[in-house]
Length: 365
Ligand SMILES: [Zn+2]
Image: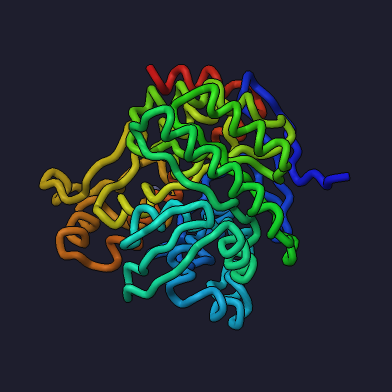
């Protein structure tokens, strides 16, 4: 009998509030995972992440296998000890970034051969290697190795790619040991095609995973298209497993996806836009580089209680951004992640009260 790590406590339409049990503690869902690419969430101290309510971080296998290498991370105690974060960590499989960042990639049945974008060194990443690297990093949630279908793509290409990902999912599961109490997620592919998404899920459900991700979205398609795919793709998963939409997104994308039954998210938007001088406010973002903020003595958001908004004016932040000061990245990343954590907490509470659908309708108006 398979141990179930996930329980749904509240359902409103397709939206769910739940609890995911991991070897590193419980995660309340829906949840947003700040991205810590190279075992650090850029410009944020781990203790600050904890303070603002981050429950789980995402780290990138591709980056860490190249530098410093998974064996070094392992010898220094594994990712948690290495980066001084005691909570759960999800690692991706490396597949997506091999395809987007590395040089001279060659894909075949076995896996992907590529050259590092750092020093040109040659690597072969296979489902077995990806799982072994993630286990060596001592990740809490491990992702199956897949091929991310680009957008737009012909149906035949999407089908061929989805079938390859299905065979790789099987190999990922076979080589997974779960040695650190870690759990394994499978990834649904199939491009923008309903029957392919359904077929992909059938393969994954037969293999059996602790959670299911939706891959191949947030690859440049319009939001409307993404929602269309989400309208049916979450229905193909078992109800008692968490669903993770990879690489999403903006607040509106997240609200729309929760409405369609998604539980987990990750995205570089709050951190990257913070480093670019952008701050999230109620109705979108403001860019502190703009001249209109130079003499503005108000905080980014009057109603925000974060460290940045409690102590600093838009005028000061505008000066830091224009001067390329490191503190600009620190303060804006802090505010943006605080905003995202607040958004997710609000979503969880609204689902529990049965008021999320009304809130979402209002938001999209
Ligand atoms: Zn703030």
